[in-house]
Length: 633
Image 1 (cartoon, helix red, strand yellow):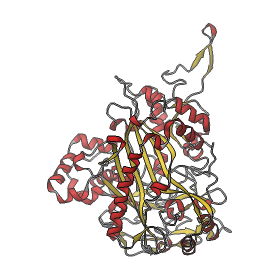
Image 2: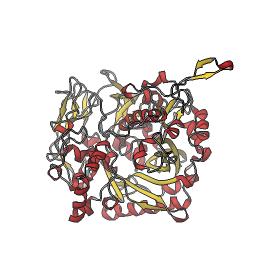
Image 3: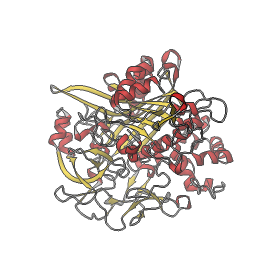
Image 4: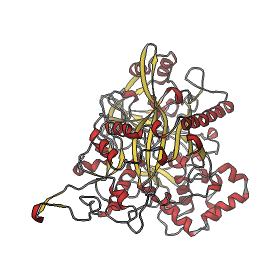
């Protein structure tokens, strides 16, 4: 993919075929820097040569300029991933059967604990108000490689290494239902984290490691995969380089009929493992995620947390997003919940144990990210596992892998990365280019909820008056509305038109009453917000905060014709063990929905799904079969 194609680092490169618009095997899903922020110079023609840019011919004459290389920050090209898998990137080539057994044991124990605590929870649709993850899929299913993610931005966390290399896998299956073969992915990812290359001495310690990820222009498909295997992945795809394994899975889902005030409820389990003896994996603590219950019960631990926050070096690192919470304060597990993002107290472990008054005496004035007590606490939660995975995500995920053209439109993502991940790909690509050119690079990470310089379009998070969010403004013609914002946490709202909502925007809103136990969260008083056109689909039918829809016969600007599952007939169809592709085909209705792409993301709690036309349309995530634990055979 040439640089000229790039104003879509996410629309053409990350999104081209299934990652963003529907997907072919060879349609590149490679994140490359399209333009260097801040006017940075383009990378050298050859890694390690700053400004040379010309090949010498006979007699020393200058030849034609070599095309500039492109920094790679994300690979989702399915044909390229096949080559990487063959070169040693398969899950079972890096994680032993004993390691997978360790994961199964932990997940089984977690699911059993949910079942014991909740008599309404069980596997499947029929007879279960609360639907559990089926642990049998960890034996019957397969883990597909869906992304290769170089993480040079992890240099601050990797000691004497140049960051990390992440291989992301998605749980999937093929099964027979009523004589028909059906396939789907499931809401579970496994990240295998490989240690980065050793850092060199001196100022340019990671220049060579970054230069390895500067690709010749135009590579795609199997050719790209072969280049990766022979280049930056050469020697890296070995079990000895595995430093950590992380899992994220939807452990239980409550449909909207059970939680009509929230538009449904789902919980995502996050655990981390280190390699142990004999290939086993050992549970370890989670990065920047406090053990809120333990700290709340232990005044000494709470005092240590406040002491850590009070250090100037800690505040500097929190501002930059490079802080690391001491292990003694960290949790071994986290559960994030949807919908409603950081309005849910379960997604804010620091806010569960600290109030703005607890940190009001810290020197925060003048800081850009943590310029107020509210902003400091939100930044801390943004750095936690639960907070990050519920900030501008695809349900509880930032990256799910592209769907091929063989996936039915009712079960296919049009955009396979979250809006936060899209911004991160641009940032990481620019960092790679800067390091490869011998510069220091910018290692500070912006907030996941909103990156600097974003214009505050409809659905963006915005400040409601707290000085720490003064830069979170709305675009012209929009105002900041207090959707979901709890009474004790009234700092951040959502950008919307001042009067009526357009297609895809909220139409049934109210303040959330949060609780550390997410089962006790409530939106007690919901109020209608008029739709400019069409009708409001409310919370009780699965649309968090409601969503305005139009008729496909009279589509307004910014809308496209998509489909909405008819939930009761669809669920009844699944309960009869009808193959889900047939249920999807027979129990949907056309509707005018907000059109979406990688460059025009959906609002929080909605995803960009592939419509039958191939366009992207915004719908609730659990209308997509692959993003719910229930109904699978």
